[in-house]
Image (tube, rainbow, N blue to C red; front, side, top):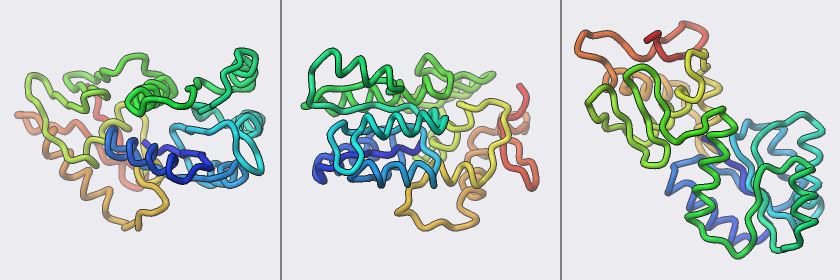
Length: 224
């Protein structure tokens, strides 16, 4: 999953980004003002936005209102040092999905981010199931039947993204956009290599494949 952190305090932005990268393994971009945030949202695909309320150029509420006005439905978590109930109501009515007051616990922030991404993908529970395959987004574990499957971080992220979109054809470009941030140097064959390794690890004893490759289109989970 790919997250945009919008925070003008450079150190805090870096700490949040590090927590999201090291914990759930998200790809994270950072913007330090609302104007830059809107530009990034119009040029990249994000699964979640973490947005500070008080920022230069365009504040957090302005970012929310503009994105919702453009029919951008990406989940948004607002960070605010303002505790007024009326202000919170305004933010939620503007289109924010959740908020946290500063100072906050990083572990709670990560948990809320996981929950917002799940809900944004239409999954209410942390356990994603598809046939005999199950993935726990909180524990980051994968099981196929009774067998525990050991995946690399990138293999896990690919499978998680596919499980959020069961039976949908997901292109290589879409995977690249949602699994890597702007700091990563794209290589054309990296997704194919990870898909190949993932397919081998998930292959059943009968030799059938959990993943399908549709030439020229992308990948999807095989019919159960």
